[in-house]
Length: 552
Ligand code: ADP
Image (cartoon, rainbow, N blue to C red; front, side):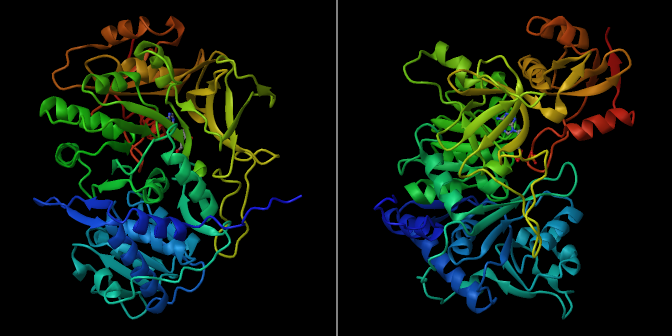
């Protein structure tokens, strides 16, 4: 028997229409670096999204599910693209502006982007790539930047448009098509640390359901009373779902544009008083150093989502002290990204909450999880048995994009035979469903047949008051197979030496797990989305580029 309910598709155009009418007064505020930021209401953003859709259809010939790239900072125009492109039936393809040129070229060609919307300030990055982007028919330039960089494009290159001129005077409503909710709405490529980047294609349905989850009280708990500071780039897994989730619930957005350094971030928080924010740990580390040196009031943020990499508990404690609560989240490009969030169960004291807060968090109803042991058997949720995390759910990828005209594909190391996503993350799950990750499978240190968690060592090191950052990787060892190498960034004026750091670790970590190899570094190398880049550290070690001290 089928239900008697209406079969109304879950579409982004519905989110757009709802946000721009019911929540028309909510705002997208974009930082400009000038005295006043730029403010635009949801009603205006919705009207301009309709104008953009008309422009893309009538001036750029977008009438099908073509991929439309965006090479943009977080700003109001990027939100307009987020809403307009999927709603009209095309596919929003966010491009990571920190990728090396050859990867960007590969990705644009693989997705066959026909149009790219670019911020003028990013033309120095994009202009030299244009001769290598044969599928690109139109380039739409938005915001300040040197247009003369496009002067040399010959007749075979894309047609150039100015964003504001292109949308001006177009109708401010659009007859959004009734699409199949399973059709492609947006796409994002993983960073391709091994092999070519892999494309994940989100559906209208997956984004709609994910947006609802983002707003739920057990996740980011956002309402129209909130303003969220969206530091996580819109090219990093759809800014963790925020641009769509906010339009669903009328949450105002504060967008940093290209002002992502700690000082302007601190200024915008103090002046605009957001109640929520989302970013990777590196951003929060930098901001903490900034406000320690030059105090600013960050206390408007009642709730901050920190994820994309493990959050050191010491960082959480430091923010607790300045009245800002960090909530740890885990996710991946393949999981839209919301996988877990570490809100503790109700009714606990601060002390009782702590062990929950420092986990990666618990799974929402939309994400099923299981742990696979090394022999393939599934492990109990007992908080002790460690295995590879596998997940499934309506906003979890079931395959990768095969490219225009190609077949989607499911590598065995990424998908189980029964279709679950193999995350490559190793950890334990408590009986009440809280996930604690110990490592990425490829970062685990295998010493004499036992596993050492690089994350545990890093968290313990970063708890030292004179340590700014620490990354631990496996290096080859003749006796044990692998041993940990600790690379450490000290705070300015620090006097601590390796022996003292090792002694500090020994108070928290089993003796056999303590690193013998140590190196001081100026900064931990980071990936294009600001995570520790352990592959680079391993290469630096192999190439003898690190000044390693051995402490046996
Ligand atoms: P990339 O592989 O380029 O970093 P993703 O953003 O998809 O791209 O990264 C997902 C991975 O990031 C996860 O598989 C996990 O290893 C790591 N990660 C994300 N959130 C956390 C977290 N809270 N704690 C530990 N690791 C995390």
